[in-house]
Length: 500
Image 1: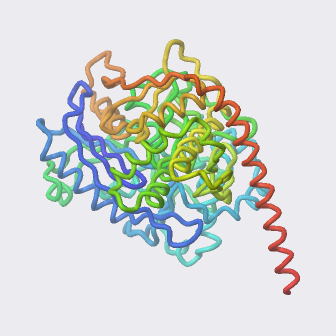
Image 2 (image 1 turned 90 degrees about the horizontal axis):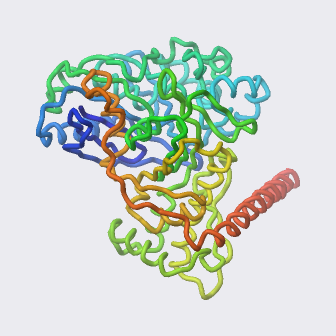
Image 3 (image 1 turned 30 degrees about the vertical axis):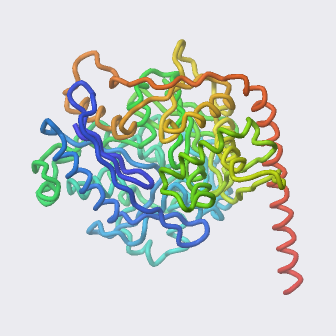
């Protein structure tokens, strides 16, 4: 089974054999476009081309003939298409905050607690009630020509099979779905200014949507009619791909962004709207929170401070430099909000801030502060969730962070919990392939999860007390930053009024 993961900056494919073991993999990167402040877009046709090429690569590399394809995709993307499925604009991604100004008026129109309780999603610019309203209010010429609003995974699924569909798990990440009944919520649709017919039809995650189209089969070397399974969101698939199948288990993931996710036996929402609740399948849910700024922060530091090195060499030097600096980065803090923030504060206008620099500090301190800053953001999400309840289970650590053991140790020290790094070709693609095997009833009885290669276990060490104090200072500094931002906005507004 092929698992195809459509990520934020790369497309990955993994082939699993009938026992869930990886036998081939391939990947290809593509850009995240930032045409103006607050916007973060992707070209779906670029992603489609990458998907075809990685499918062709794994088809030729696989020692066995694949029996199907199952998909995984990044959450919260929003793409308007015409009646023929042609994109009418680039897709908004999870990092796109252009609709933030519409949050307040929409929240004033709806029953906020009721809608949050039903959909599991706060009324924020990450979610479709706000995003789709942006198309209606700010781009009416596009909205008038739009036949459907779909996600990037939905569009790729249609390109592969000719069928429009959205799995209930991905649908639950839009803020338009009732997570208990698995139906579109009328109040959410009204806020978004859309009708059910303008969305892709709902299907179970483990359903076969259709067969591979002949033209795609010819391009990939796969057989025409190959079953294509709907799959799910990258977050849900990553949990499955790391062996998480029982409620109460938790996973910390850091890739381009980051997240803390916990599998739950029933829907759960936070009274303060700090977290979200998504569907996995008929009787399991994911509760958690996502941060905007994970690996992209390290990539920013790498490009800024190690420009003469290749990306791989730059990351290695960054980690080595950070290891030479003691916990706490000698008083240097990086508030890593390069793209604002999602959970738990939902503050898309938060700026990044570097604080505490002195003449004796250098790039090694910035490197250490970047690693620590992301860890503190994850800790804010961790503290907003109920404690994991699965006895004897170590929280998994997944994503690109596992390639930097120092970073994993810092996260364990900041959170105050042991973390087990999971080695997987790609957790989301692996989870999708596992789901595909289940969908086709090709997983041996009793095989509840793929064989996971356990990696390094990071146990909170002697730096834990330092990070407990530093986390309180980090949160206090963040609140002061927000007060200063409000004061600066007030001064700017006064200046505009005076000039008028």
